[in-house]
Length: 207
Image (cartoon, rainbow, N blue to C red; front, side, top):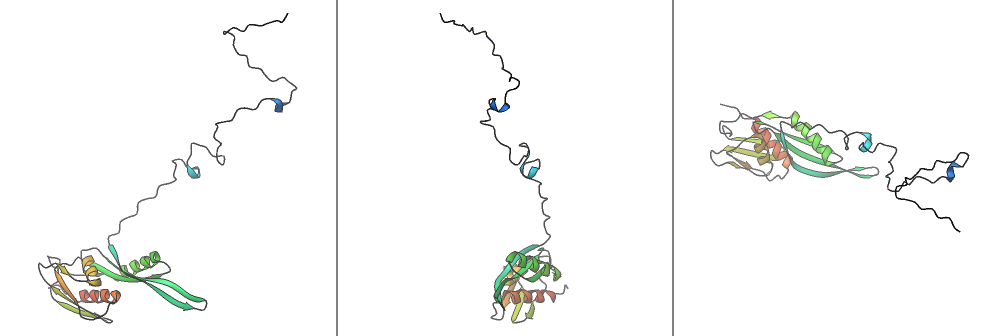
């Protein structure tokens, strides 16, 4: 006869300990399926780069400059070298606080960002202060010449700013309104037009 053993539901499972003297490799390996491996030995609770917080340190906000700026002209220039042509950029920038201070600068660099930074530094060195009337206009008509450009500025109450080309940008960033401007030469060079406007504003004298 064959012996049969009946197992009741109340029977508790008993863990089987490894027998001494047996090879450890013969024991069944632990089930690691579903476990996520750690990358590079770092703690999973830490962010990138090993810094707590997830995305590294935060950058401090940049301070806002007291001047506003505008790019008047961007030109690509070439210089002939022994190995060929070398290209760079020439940028004309106007800055101002729209309260009477304005400046024009020129910068050159291998890329536009570097050229703009140089132009802004140049413009800050050439800042002028314009005496304005109570209506943010000028006291009297003025004319000035720079290189091949001649500019005339005429106050005109109630008409607003009537100007074009680089003259308008310079007058806007200086905070001047109610002025009519005339470019009396055929020059299209925005750098010389802007600097002629600055030269005209230098001649102003408050009465």
